[in-house]
Every structure is written in C-alpha cells, then in structure tokens.
Amino acid sequence: MSADTSNFDLTGRVAIVTGASRGLGQYLARALARAGADLVITSRRLEALSEFQAEVEALGRRVLPLQLDVGDPDSITAMAAAAADAFGHVDILFNNAGCNIRKLAMDVTWDDWNLVLDTNLRGTFFVAQSVARYMIPNGYGRIINIGSITCVSGYAGLGPYCASRGGVKQLTMSLADDWGGDGITVNCLAPGWFKTTQNEVMYEDREWVEYLCERIPLNRPGKPRDLDGAAVFLASEASEYITGQTLFVDGGMTVGRVCALPTKS
Image (cartoon, rainbow, N blue to C red):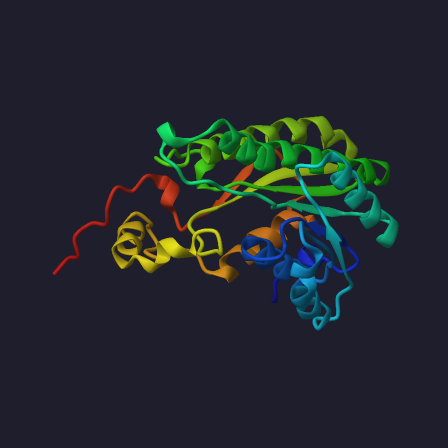
C-alpha cells in the first residue's frame, strides 16, 4: 500500500518567500513550487529575481516578483498588500530575508548591531505581522520563520547574528500563541551549515570544512535538497497540529558532538 501524500500537496496555495534572489531563499521557494504552490518572491532589487522567476515559471507555477526592504515599514506593508491583491489570498510565509556581519565582539559597531538585528529580528516580526493581516480573515496560515543552529548555539564572531536568531526562536513561540486561535501556525525552520553566497568563502578553506564535518554526525554540510522535506512539511496540512516549534535541519550538529570518534580497525 502506498503512503498518502495528499497532506503535503500545496496545489492552490500561495506562498511568499522573502530574500529569494539567492541561497536558502531559492532552495525553499523551489521546494514549495515543486509541491504545487504559486509563489511571491521578494528581494531588495527586483532585477535580481528575473532568472529565478523564469525557472519557477518553467515548472508551471505562477510567480509574482516584488521589491522588499525589510528595514522599511512602508515597503513591508506594500509587499503584503500587493501579494494579497494579486492572488486574492496568502497561505504561506517563509520569513527568510536576513544578513550577517562576522566580527569579533570587540570590533562590532553600533551600526553593525542595528543592521543585523533590524534585518533578522525586527524585519521578521513586521513581515509576519503584515502578512498575518491577510491570513487572519481567512482563518488559515502557515508562517515559517528562518532561524539557524545559532538559535541555540553561540559562536565567536557572530554576536549580533546569534542574538537575532535566538530572538527569532522566542518570537516564533510568542506569535504561535498570538495567532493560534486564528488558524495560523508559526514555526521556525533552523538550518545548520549550508553553503550559500553569504558564507561560500569559508568553504574554500579545506581544513575548516574538515573541522566542520567532524562536528556533524552525518559528516557533511547541508545540500540544497536537504531542506525540501522540512520546508514542505511545515508549509502543508501535514503540520496542522504543530506550532511554536523549532525544527533543526543540521545533520545532527546541535547534539553537541565535539569531534568524530576514531574509526574502528
């Protein structure tokens, strides 16, 4: 007997994916499109979305590219309104837009702190708030905030980023309580180490990659398709009784492994 996969079908659903011009945003948007969802994709620069828009349209999905600056409240409000106006409803939000500045704690400036926290935490809240205004009247929504393993782990040189992602985890739980009665689930998808445009320079260091893999029980960094199942699950009917949770997709890194055990001879 084959398994019933209908609860994972996103046909007819409309999903907003912020920060979809590259990296994790595109991984997530592809997974939703393959599962049947129509997409609203955003970036600070509209022209950065054109190539990806064509790729998704080739899958037979409707795609609306919109400009979005999560540091600008007017831009957030306009994006949510345009998405709802174009499709008539919004069912799914992947709150993915983010940034990072890698500096040792003593070198972090006031402006560094504000940029990272304003983008990753304040932006996440106000995008969720604006989109939820269109979900609440329909009594349905799936909001997935993107975190990382830094939701629960701290690393030198990532002070503002760790603070922002820890905040996203706590914010997710608060919003889940706020909007649960409105039929909206709010969860946090927390990837481990995936190679993206933001961090690709680190993967050029073979010793660092070996060091990283020793601390991951599955012995490798994440690949793009590793996020597909979790993304579709949290966006679908299959997760209807799950809210306020953080799902780590990290190869097991958050178990706290210090180093790999010696190979048995």
